[in-house]
Image (cartoon, rainbow, N blue to C red):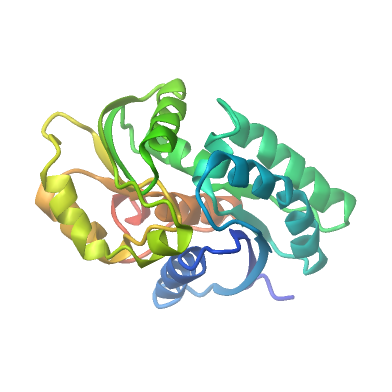
Length: 251
């Protein structure tokens, strides 16, 4: 296979409709300005309601997904569900990434594994953010769990919004055009960055540039952070037009 062509593996909750929309959209936009080409390959884990019991059962299926994707000899794997990782306890993304990568190696298709949870906390460090606000689609208890996980990684979450959407399909149907108004109701004056979507399922890409212009702050999302981490893992320049500060080429 030509090293101008990269196979992107995606470990996706069965009800997720956005990871396979936004991440390919970013990498296909990158194809307009860089020579590399990408193909996209998914394996699914069952999950319909965003509740802790379903998330834990779903996470247990991620091992199978990693093996299936390594059968296709993908070059990098992205684990979509941020809240499933964060619901498993502080720092779990590191354990998950190591375990899933080990499965690919045993199967003869050794490849780096990116979790959206790990990618998001790393992205905040990359842009030098300390004080942040967070928008999440989850019910309040799960949102608080996500906020606590991010705080444990060394960030000051000064404000957050839980949109309280329990059904994962409905999360994917949430209109991103509502997000600028939600952010405008938060105090962003003294923050370093805005996490516009702490969820790979909640669409946000179409309004990232608008929220950056409105707040004059860097905006990151779980999908943008995952795309950045995938490009870095592939040793490719992390540049995507129209995908916010993190993918502007400044980092």
